[in-house]
Image (cartoon, rainbow, N blue to C red; front, side, top):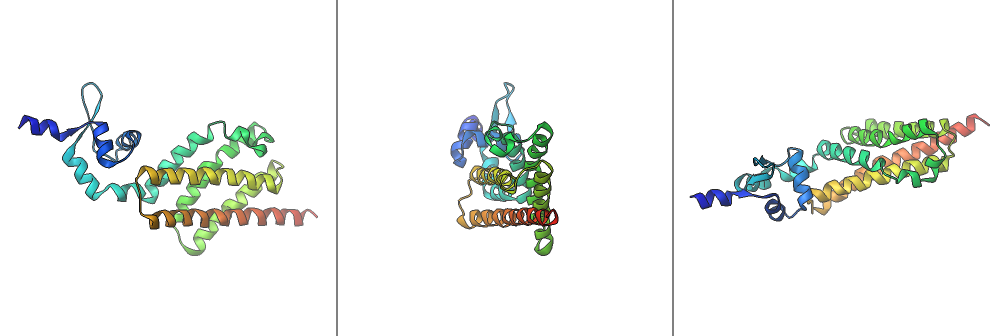
Length: 211
């Protein structure tokens, strides 16, 4: 009986092997409340085998690929990435003063929120969401005297971060269904393509008005 009780408790490493994901993923899921977890008096994470098996059967995939869940995680990841030195290497970023740099660092958050709105809407409303973001990127670029090439480069930088983060979310969730990957990538590209077109059209309109 005691042996059965002992065997019912799993360590973080045990759960990692059972689910086939990296230990850091188990840790992140536990800390976000996705996985049922207990703490020992020493602060170590412990899991009940029966609860993990039930969770695997019933909720794992649905929780991990729900758009709002994935986007919340993506937003947290993008904030971290934008704080790194990657921005400093961007030619367009080097042209900006401190105020402009702060505005562009917020662009990642705006882009993910826009994608969330896009995924939650359909048809004309969804296109309007993307096109309004394109106008915003163009207006900001013009305000800080960036060329349309630099403004497009700035947007492509944030689109790259968005795609990397979304792919990592799906990898962490251990999603192997190619159709789900294809649908996710299609939606992100449809959304960001509309932003790029709107950005370029807005720059073109600004130039016509000033000739």
